[in-house]
Image (cartoon, one colour):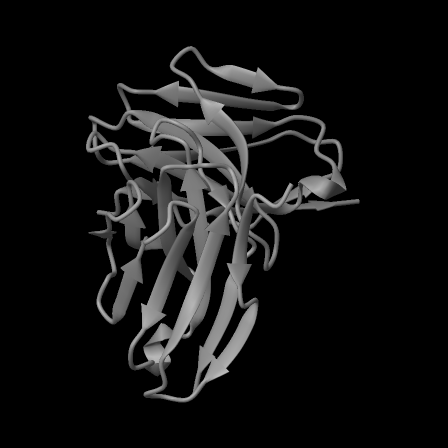
Length: 112
Length: 110
């Protein structure tokens, strides 16, 4: 039972580099979310999707882009990484918004 | 004022003792409430949903007070394995999104 899988688990980037984080879920969930977690800040919503082909901005969307071309995948892109984007990124999914969210085990991203 | 506020702790709890802590939320139209548990450097995991009538799951009891806009979590007979950060999570009236509190850290000691 894979659940929510995030790739990669760790990454170090240089300022200005780009990368894509992949989130894949095998539970046929409609809703998917990308969060970042920083010390003392709790989880903050970056972008989310309510279904294949849809995306919406969350609380802290600047500097990130997302795509949901397939229902099972939600991609988070950093076009030009900045040190302020050093964080732990979590992806989550849920069947509907009344239900709790299931989380992936996170991606630790450092930008130098 | 933050939408969801928690005492960051840590709450230092002797093994076997009871610990309780609250979470306040600012939006009176909030619809759903959850407690998640997060271990160090791990992903958040659902501990329990919080219902209007209150609910209990083993040693854990959650309560909702809509009038005062807070939810609570009580842990009885604390175990060493209960050491974690407990996240209060609230779904607002808009529906699609959850708002997370900053977490309350609990340390259970022998």
